[in-house]
Each structure stands twice: as structure tokens, then as C-alpha cells.
Image (cartoon, rainbow over all chains, first blue to last red; front, side, top):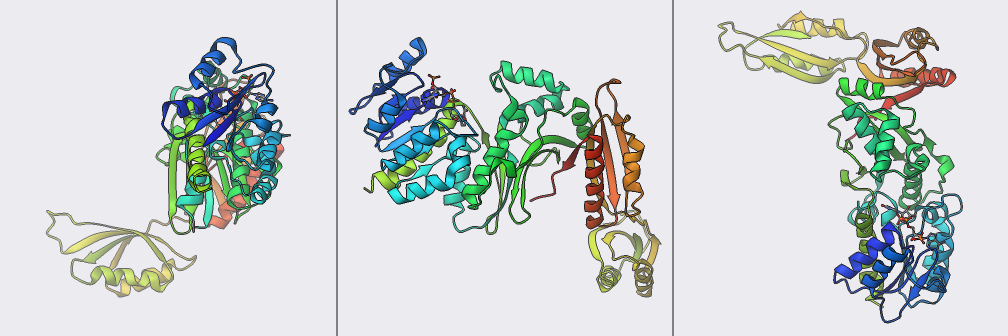
Amino acid sequence: MKVAIIGFGSVGQGVAESIQNKDLGIMITGIADSKSGVIAGSGIPVGEVLAKKQSQGVCGDTDVSAWDVVKSADYDVLVECTPTDITTGKPALEYIRYAINRGRHVVTSNKGPVALAYKTLITEAGEQGVCLRYEATVCGAIPIIHTIQEGLAGNDILKIYGIFNGTCNYILTRMAEDGLTYEQALLEARELGYAEADPTYDVKGIDAAIKLVILANTVWGLDKSIDDVEITGIDNLTPEALQLAEKHGRTIRLIGEIDPAKGTLRVSPRIIPQEHPLVVDGTLNAVLLEADMADGITMIGRGAGSIETASAIIGDLIFIRDRYVKAA
Amino acid sequence: MKLEIKDRPGQLVAALKPISDVGGNIIAVIHQRDPGSASDTLDVQIVLNLPEGRLEHLIDLIREQGVSVVRVGEERLLHRQEVIIIGHLMHTDLSDTVDQIDRTGFAEVSEISVVMPAIDQPSSAHLTIRSVSSEDMGKALEILHRTAKEKDLLVIKPLEECT
Ligand SMILES: NC(=O)c1ccc[n+]([C@@H]2O[C@H](COP(=O)([O-])OP(=O)(O)OC[C@H]3O[C@@H](n4cnc5c(N)ncnc54)[C@H](OP(=O)(O)O)[C@@H]3O)[C@@H](O)[C@H]2O)c1
């Protein structure tokens, strides 16, 4: 199976490395970043491209653009890992639509297009008989979408709630354990590379809210947008509030909840017993599903990271390989 | 409530039966037998949920079974919820915030701890609210929510109990 990778940052490189290191029967025929691209129908020497990206900051030829790769490289699946834009979804949305309408499968780690245009994308994919998968957009390495669609097939999913943002979880863990102020914990998260230079999306609860929108629209077929989510971030929390919670055997975590029966779509800091399964440390994510037959299922894992996110993408690729490409 | 029953087969069942007869719900039954005791009675503690106004009738029914009711620790406000509020609590009159709930008659703030780091910094408070029913708790939290909005306070609620 041939794949092209658009976006060659942390995630894109993780995917390339994993394909190189494992014998998955997957060949990379196109790679692009913001300034360059490389196309090779007989397979790209991944080691060389990774080294070039490290040393020169570009993955390929500056005469070749990401659009060239999307439009003309020979691939079965487009792996889209460009930066998230949650207002327009661009440029990812355009790359993805182009690939779908070219009759190609798509795997993405990008929340923007899935949160903004799932209905359109899935309709177009259906018309073209291709598959769109997005496991990496929610909870990183945790196979939540796969669990719901495959493992829990036949169940009615009643509720989903959990810790959807590792940055916030890290900050809250540090505030609770060591009495750091919010500002100190944020600074530390930034130094360790857990938080972006502009942490607004994370700490205001927007990143978690986008993931809820993706789940609401893909699991229940709802038509929600970020404006439908009731959002409270963690930026006004005090270390004293955490200490008071701890004194009572509780702690505070940023919880995202979807309960369609009650019409709940909310991200907010909540008091939660310390021994609750959703209370995880550091940058971990945790999610609890309630299904009519299976009852409760809790999953804990890494919500971000190069190889961890690649794990979700590779899972999607192999799903497509086995269900579509091999069968064709 | 705490009961004293004869240490004989069937006695405990006899003591518990009236509870369901009056529409009550048993939450826990705790019995301790003192091994050294020569007494032929057994102390049993029962934690239960009762529809309002049925307590007297229940005690009569239990006594009719020949069981003595040693003590009734009546807990009127069964439902308990913790919240944490953050903001300029003193400037916005914390006692008024608490009073909004106490005034309802169906819920009250039974515990409060406040931490004030510095005069111009937001303070934090942990409140325990008790109410007669979960419906009343909902109403009390709604009142708190509204008051907090007016006073620009952040209310952190517990995650509802889940599986
Ligand atoms: N990092 C994680 O752990 C994680 C986890 C889950 C989901 N995600 C999502 O996965 C996506 C990628 O994340 P990342 O951490 O890998 O980001 P990143 O390190 O910033 O990499 C983004 C890549 O996209 C390229 N790019 C930017 N604009 C482009 C354009 N117009 N056309 C083609 N390529 C373009 C960049 O090119 P240059 O190299 O030239 O700058 C870079 O290679 C994001 O949507 C993110 O939200 C990330």
C-alpha cells in the first residue's frame, strides 16, 4: 500500500519513522512540509528525508509543493498531519477533499477538518467509495474511535466523559501535588514542551471542546460546532482551590462530557474523588465510555507525542489496508 | 437508627421487614456481636432512606415485632454535595452567597472553609451543601450558579457519580 504524508512535523515524522522501522507493507511515495515536497513512485528513502529535514529544515525539493504531492503523487492513502486551524480547517480541509475526490483514502490527525466538516467529508468519501479515518484527533494513542466503532459495535453509546487535554492535566497535577500556582505550572509545562507558546486553546478548554465536537458528530451523528459546547477553562483556578479539594479526598480535573440524552456538551473543571478512574497524572488522557451492553469502559493513555500519535495513524492505515486496499 | 434485637433466628428479618412496608430503602445494615458478651441481644445499626413523615410509624411497627429501638439518629438533610468557589469572595459578600442557599429552607450550607491568600488575590472556598432530596440539590446548585454569575465567581461542581 502506498501513502503520501502531508505535514512533516512531529506527527508526520513519527509516522514516517514507524513505517520505516516496521515491516507493515506500507510504502511512502510522497512527503511534503510547508516549503517543499518529494515524490517517488517507487518509494522514498525515509532515512535520508528525515535526516534532510533535521539538518536543512525542509523534507524535499522547494520546487515541489504540498499541492503537487496531493494532486499527483501515486498513493492509496493520504496521511494528513498539517497544523490545526479550527476556524477554517485550511489548508488541511482542501487537501483532504481533493484526495477524497481523487478516489483516495485519507487518514488525518488534524482536528480542524473533522470538527468543522465531518458530514461533508464523510458524504464525499461515501460517494467515492473511500475511507476517512481520524483516530489520532481524539486522545492521541488511545484507540477511542476504533473501540466505539469496532469493539463496541452494536452497543448504544450513552455517554462519554474524560480528560481530553494532557497540558491541562499536567498543570492541574502539578498544582495539586506541589502547590504550584497556575502560572508556575504553565511555565513548567512550556519548558518541558507540553504546552504551546500560545497555550490559550489548551488552558481555555477549547482543544478539549473540539474533541467533544468530533465525538458528538462522529459517534452520534449530531451536527455540533464549538459554539454548542459550554466551556470553562482552568486559567482561573487557584492552588488553594486544589488544596481544599485534596483536603476532602478530592481533586480537580478538566473534564469533557457528552451526554446526548441530557443535551450535555461541556468542558469544565470538576471536583472528582482522588480514586476515580479518570484521575490520571501528568500529561495522560483518560476517557470513560458508557454503553448499553458493555456498561462502563475506561481507557487511559498518551494523548500526544510523535510516536504515540503515529500509533493511532498507523492503526488507521492498517485498517484501511486490510478492509479496502487488500480487498481491491 | 440503632436497634437491639434478640439473638434468635428470624429476629433480624422481623426487624427489617417493616422498613419496606413503609416504603423505605435500606442503605446499610451493620451488626456487631460482642464475643465476650453473655447477653442474648444483638446491636444492629441500620442506615436507611425514608419517605418524609414515616419515621414514627416505622418505629411503632418495629417495636410491635418485639425489637427495641435504642437510638434514632435522624439525618434530615441526606443529600450532600461539595462545591468549590473561586473569586473575590469577601468583596462580594460571602455570607450573602451562603444565605441565598440557607434561605431556601430545603438546602443549607453545612460546612465552609475559606482560604484567602492576599487581599487583592482571588480567594477559594470549599462548601458542603446538604438538602432533603436530589431535586432540591439541583435547585440549590442552580441558585448558587446564578449568584456566582452575578458576582463573577467561578463555581466548580463535582462530577456526578458515575460507574
Ligand atoms: N503533536 C501531537 O502530539 C499531536 C497529537 C494529536 C494530534 N496532533 C495534530 O496533528 C497535526 C500535526 O501536529 P504536529 O505536532 O506534527 O505539528 P508540527 O510539528 O507543527 O508540524 C506541522 C507540519 O505541517 C507542515 N505545514 C504547515 N503548513 C503547511 C501547509 N500549508 N502545507 C503543507 N504542510 C504544512 C509544517 O511544515 P514545516 O515543517 O515546513 O513548518 C510541519 O511539517 C496537527 O493538526 C495537530 O493538532 C498532534
